[in-house]
Amino acid sequence: MLAIDGLTKSYGAFDLGPIDLAVDEEVLAVLGPSGCGKTTLLAAIAGVTDTDAGTITLNGRDLTDRAPEDRGTVLVFQDGALFPHMTARENVAYAAASTGKIDELAATLEIGDVLDQRAATLSGGERQRVALARSLAADPSALLLDEPLANLDAPIKRRLRDELRPLLSSLSIPVVYVTHDQHEATAIGDRLAVVNDGVIQQLDTPSEVFARPATPFVASFTGSTNLFQARVAEEEGNPVLEWADHRFDVADDEYPVGVDIWFCIRPEYVTVVDDLAVEGRNNLDGHVRRRVFEGDGYRIDVTPEGADDVLQVTLSPPDYDWLDLDDRDRVRLSLPQDAIHIVGECDRTDAD
Figure 1 (cartoon, rainbow, N blue to C red):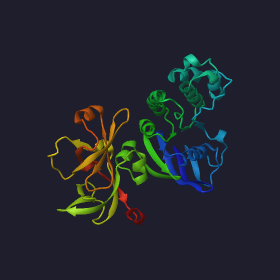
Figure 2: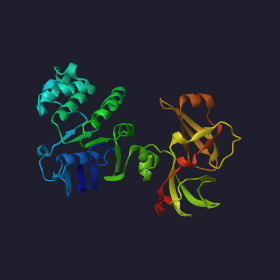
Figure 3: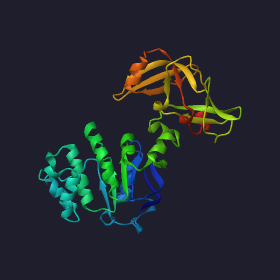
Figure 4: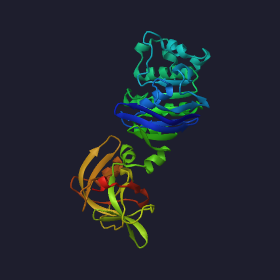
């Protein structure tokens, strides 16, 4: 168990923490934008950076004032930081707790055929695999990964992402995996910590974070581009949301009538109703403003009638082809009641 209690670190105008975090034998993905404090958190755990306050323990052992080499942690940077003049085998052996682990890890990470090549001649994907093998060869009690796939081409990144998940899960040690890529975080992490401005804004399973973001930042950063302000109302004893000229049924009855709130709905849950005659509380009409092909699907921007906002819809290529949409087409959208999530109350600045 890796436990962090009340950890803080200040750099001029930037403050990290306080951070309270417990990582068991799992992969914790730490997600956030550049400059939010992700790497500082890893450096503090590894002992590379001194902290201002707080404690760090690993399996009950206080690491707070220990030197990096006496912590039992291994930090892997995004560039791998290999010795370029050494072969891949020599790089792995440099940190190996036993020579027997080298061939075992080489087989697991599929680097056996490059072990005798100098590190400088390896491809990006091969370097990352060798760097990971070197880290695991040290038999760490906790593994810290700082955007290890950031510098790789998309196809290599996708393949390694899929391969890393079972490997990291099999280690049975705390793994903290830092990334700014939401797809990487959800594919690899058992749990997900979303960080912004030095603070953990939400800590939960990836599915819970994406379905029910805790703050407007978490909603927008994890892809809930449909993030709007509305007011809670009531109709026939049931909660409804008033948004522009529209009223939506919602499943959330936590907020009192008259409160201004943020609500979101992920673009993939908004559907285009093929028959404009179909009525429904959570249906609304609008006009297609823009269509963008994004490789694996289409993003459709719709301007709802009676609203100044833009509602985004994600369509698969077959659905897009079947609907045969064009700019300025009138469409009817459906916002399923159970897909609308109230993020939280608006403060006065938001409401203004």
